[in-house]
Length: 356
Image (tube, rainbow, N blue to C red; front, side, top):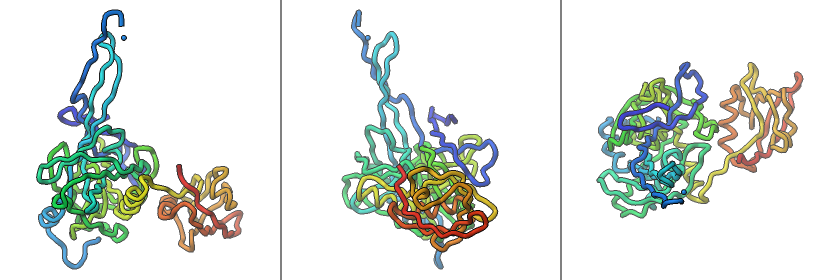
């Protein structure tokens, strides 16, 4: 587990990355300050791109967006017993970033920033701090929504861009609180698109944006903006041998953020569609390795050895592409599949289930 200055410890999540360097690890970008407070109970005796026509400068993007970026402090308490001192509890604090999503007081961040916390507070760019409540968490996409009751003057929602229009080479700006350094602004470009990373609970997150903008521990949950000051992603992980910024960072795309955030705000939870297959990329499509009993794939008649060549009329060539299409649907949606089996083409229809 990489250690950073000031006894800050990074949370590590292993990523399945196309083209990732050997030996590099994906590191979630919150940072934990451990053992900030310890209380001891002494026992008694004998007891126990959208880059459009007009782009802004980095400074203009920062000036526009910074009022909507917040610092998040999530506190958790761990209890235990240590001989001969009896029961004791320690308080741990994880710091990250978020941004104002709407004028009602909803704020979006990474799930790994606030997961398991007993208390969450939000600091605005003017230095004022308020308590927050957790609206909902989705470990599969590493996204969460928290809520604050704050004056309207402090709630400056950031605009979301269309992440499907992001292109390699687009200029980007990241704003966050690396190592607790408030309102830090870095810039760079989109280095790659459609990357796959792995969430802290080992679910694949498709379509992520790779950037060389410097992001470090504490940037988790912060916005990655285009040069129109629109959020195109949420910075979530870095690929690093050292545990620090090596110029390879990843952001969850804004289209995913919008879908999940709206579901969390509406119902407190997010639903994910499930086909029920293990697949791998093949020369002529996506090969089915296994089919899970009782799933949409089994009910539709998919078999191990089938090669999925198209979904809903769209040709699929990689396993990542297939997963991204499934992720873009809701449980209950009907998905037409074109399958190659023993040299013959078959057309099947799967009614997607729910991923638990």
